[in-house]
Image (cartoon, rainbow, N blue to C red; front, top):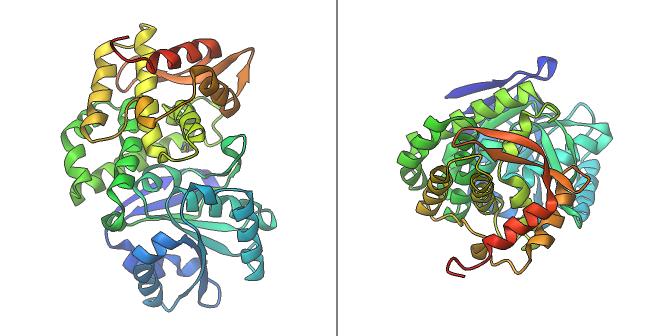
Length: 369
Ligand code: GLY
């Protein structure tokens, strides 16, 4: 078992990473239950794959889950599902002193987390992530959101959980495509600030994806530790530190929105990471070999690395326009995360949008054109 503390003063909370932890969830969640019941928000797929384990784990401590089940998929992270969820929580009498449990992947963590942040001006939240992506990123750090027609995560709030419970055994039932997509976020941590960890990924990524328990627990613990440290330093994403976690994400969000969320978030992140490194290399900021190394590792684990693989019909200008909506933009310039090399990401505040558009157009031309 690994315990990582997110140091946020009187809002500090533990992230408990423990194989088989779900089987003992009742013990951990008992302080957040009322009259032996605890409201759990989940989706149909997670319910089918892990619902019995969570129920048995809760029952073992005399707790009963009161489940709210959402349709799976990113489409559920919208206004209409949020409104329905708020009604369902209100009908159950959830109040300021209660906690709700977000039991699922990134969509559930974001939707239930956002509902918790606004219901009665804020109710308690416990995150129990079941996807690799949510374990290493979404469930830790308090960012919650829904998507709107303007783009991904356009409406949201910071709402820190009281506890994050990670049971890596949940990954045993995760479809391999989703596992791989979550792995892109793991690679991201190495690319931001830890070249040794990126080298570890090159050596161990394939066995991690094949189900090696030690490798996945090691990676999850390391990523959660890195994220907890960043969040403790820059909780509200104001000091330029937390922004580093968005390496590849401006491109990824544009790709996701442009493809109607057909790509999984982590798949779009894999392409976004390659684009961030390629753009850095084109500007002479980062060695071309580093950009090639990033692409080659992601390709080796069967993640997409090019816009063509995303099947994008959009031109660079359209994607750049999406990026403008996604991020703070002023005078035709946006903030992007670029890199001086593997493990050396940094924030650039004034990348001209027309340069991004031209760069994206070049990515979509055949190599021999
Ligand atoms: N997923 C990026 C962040 O939590 O800041």
